[in-house]
Image (cartoon, rainbow over all chains, first blue to last red; front, top):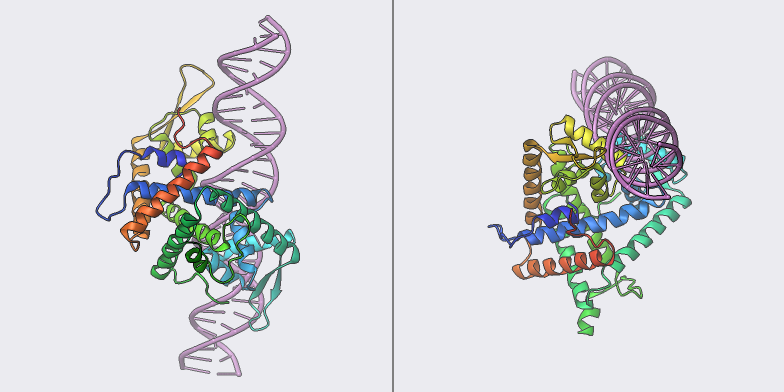
Length: 166
Length: 166
DNA sequence: CCAATGTAGTTGGTAGTACAAACTAAATCA
DNA sequence: TGATTTAGTTTGTACTACCAACTACATTGG
């Protein structure tokens, strides 16, 4: 829901009985789209999709199988198979057969892929930092704390992921 | 105050000179993905994409041309042409020739499209509200205020959007 | 041990998404 | 009026994502 869309649901607070006002939902939704769009734009500058960027990010400290990658990205393994194939064609990742299980393929970053991941991450980080420029130090700390609490809480309730091994 | 703040930005924060620590970027990025994913999931339950959902949202109180829609969605007009065509095939929107300009096509919601937009919006709102369940009243108010400040500030700096006419 | 079953990954088919370029029809400008 | 611009569609390419079918390998139960 873009700013445009969310802006339509304005009028009072309509604080429903879950205790969360609609302007809270709007603010979070808009913020999320803003941040998401920033990453999308930075990735697109390098002809990358968000999923590809996420994959490279995952691979920065892991060397998973295609299957595990599919779990981490929440995609079908066939989707990941193609994603990896295209990334390999571009020289961003490599496939290697697993020693343990000869059916498995281990995916890892090339130096080029690592460089690209680093650049996009850095630029995106800069964008987000810039986005928060207007906040006081105190508010920055506060929003970090709350955002973290939300994410951790959600992870515990649903995924139980957030730093899973492999 | 400074001591308190410093105490909170503990180990490995790499607080760069823009004053925004990397954990802040991480927290916001993760939160964004969480929220974005919620809308995506709700939309997907009805075989809709996020863009289609956004379009229906826009059409709730407007009857724009294809061109204007492309501006609002930040897409190429050819992309929107197809998007509208598919939505029309599904009975969600209608096209009508403009009276003023016979080249133009006015796009508007059907009742079915309106219903769908309403449902997805409501469910998504519920998801976000649920996401914030664990926060204290105080933190909810605070995060709303800060998120709003960020979004408003960004809109002023870049888009100057957020409720533009038409 | 090996046949039945399960798992990892790829391939092929379908559909949506997005863009650029080429095109048609209508409006505007000179 | 003729030249140019604009609105929208169409066509071609590529990516994304799924499911179903398939191959190759692994595991398990008789």
